[in-house]
Every structure is written in structure tokens, then in C-alpha cells.
Image 1 (cartoon, rainbow over the protein chains, first blue to last red):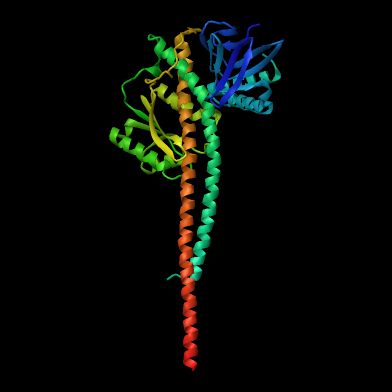
Image 2: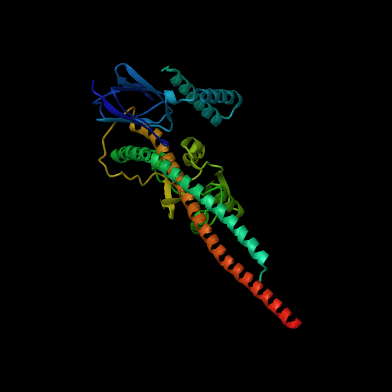
Length: 135
Length: 286
């Protein structure tokens, strides 16, 4: 199967740079699957997992906190403020962050803080899910 | 003339100072190389996001977004990036002098501007002059990653969106090389001067629409501009401190040299005097 290059870049440096057969990501408007030769496109992403299918039934999961995806004829780039490969995720830290966010959600009444806590909870849950290999 | 013992004490204390400054210089040198690596790691992200923003914002003329529009300026925001600690030569003072002058020139009333200070030196400078600091961040690590600065960066962009100010300038030291850092003023918001980095502009399909993508993209772009400046500033800080400490060590060495000369002269004078006294005493006995 035809492969193409995928880059996942964050402000702290590149996270992923490999050749894949398929990228599947959660865009704001729904799930997206991209294969070689896709039309150039830009789409914002949700906080969620990106699955990279490497071929031979092997795939890799990467946790993404928002950002967006850019498709070019020969290359896909994901620009996110934070991204972590499943194997690099610190589960203990993610759990802690999740608990902290849940506490905040219960305690705070302020609208802004509530939103922030919700986002934090989403990110933490996402990282945990990716770590455990769930999509 | 100072006594032998006084000079000796000064020599030892200067030596100790020079040991400290030399250690600080070496620490800064290693921090500098890491800060440079950080700044380098950020380049691909910045390039990419700039490319996409340029191709969307310039490619389709009919898209609008509050961040792209110049609105009448009632209030100006100043983001000033300084360090927490001194001993970095002219690093802080040159930025602060520059900003202070610009603010005095541009504004007559205190209600016309908002200051956001990064670093303790900047915060204290403005507070001491009775200029209100709306937001401040101190205690940034030497190698900040994006998570460390997310809060301030987001706050700065949000304040613009909420209308707390109508334009935002940022001041930081741009890292040229280890001995040169330039004070730089950059207009961050509104995003009027998006330059395309040369390459061809690709035409994209937008999913779901160009507006909605700008909604996500532009804040992210503005945030990365600020983050880039922070990284640049950190690299400059370490470079400035390294140079300052290098100079301090050199000066200490020079001082030790002249003090040693003085010490030797005083010692010789003392010996000569002793001999004269002995000879004088012996002559008196005869």
C-alpha cells in the first residue's frame, strides 16, 4: 500500500516523523481518515487520539490536545500545542491531573474556571485512554 | 599606604569573587546551549504554523476574524519580557529603558496602556515607578516548555479578544549570538503583518470552513509568537549573563594583578625599612 510522511509538531519540538498508510484523527466536524493522495486540506482537531497505521497491521496511538491537521499531496502535518506517543505517557501524572480537574469541577462556580477544568479533564482522560490503547 | 595584611585580604576576597563569577559563567554557558537547542526545536512548529496561517489569511481575501482586524486604538498592551534575576549585564536595563521611553512618548495618561510583565525585574521596575502591571509571571524555569508558559500566553491573547487592549506590542531581547542581543519591539496583535515564508501558497480545502479554522488557528499562532519570543529571551538572558560574568572574571583577574603588585611593593618597602632600621641601630651602637 502507498505510504506517506506524517509529522506531528509541538512547540517543544517534533514528536512523530514517520511513514504511514493511514492517519485517523478526530476533527471538530467528525472522524477523519486520510490516505496517500488526499486533497490538500486543513481541519481543526478535537482533544483526542490520532491513530497512525504503519502497515503490517501495526498501528500507533498519539494523544493530541487540540491543534489542527494539514494535508498536502505528499505529506500530513499535525500542529498541536501538546502531543504524546502512547508509550511516552506518564500514566500516574495523567491520573493525578484527572483527579485534580475533577476536584476543580466540583468546587468551582466561576464560568471561566469551569471551562478550563473541563478542558483539563478532557486532556487527562484522553492521555489515559491513549496510554491504555483505547481509541 | 594600605598595610600588607589589608592588601592580602583584598586579594583573597577578589579571588573568591572571581571563582564565583567563573562558575556562574560556566553555568550560563551550558544553559545557553540548551536554550539555543530549545529555540531550534521550536522552529519547525513556527514555520509550519506561519505557512498555514499565511496561506489561509492571504489566500482567501473574504475571510475575516477579529484578530486580523485593526480596530481604533484606545488602549495599548505591552508585554515586556525580562529575567527574574540580575547579574546579566545590560539585559534587563536596556529593555526597560527602551519600553519606558516608548511609553512616555506614546501615552500621556496612565489609562492608555496596560503592562504585562514577564520576570521579576520588569515587574518591580514598573511597580516602583507607579505604573500598574496588569499581569505578571515570575519564576519561569530556565528551560521553559510550552506547558509552563501556556497560562500567561493564553491570558495575553484572551485579553486582546476581550477588548482589554486594542493592540499588543511585545518587547524582548533577540538572540543574535553569544555577545550580541538586540532589544526588539514586535507588534503581535492584531495580526496585520503575516509574512509568508517565501514558499508557494497552497490552496486548501477547509473542513468545515475557513472561518472556523481561523478561530482555532489564529489564537494558536499568536500564542506561538509569544512563546517564540520567550524562548528567544531566555537564550539572550543566558548569553547576556555569560558575557557579564566573563567580564567580571576578567576584571577580577586584572584587579588581582594590580593588587599583587601593590602587595609586593609594600612587602619590599617593609623589608627595606627593616634593613635600614637594623643598619641604623648597628651604626648607633658603634
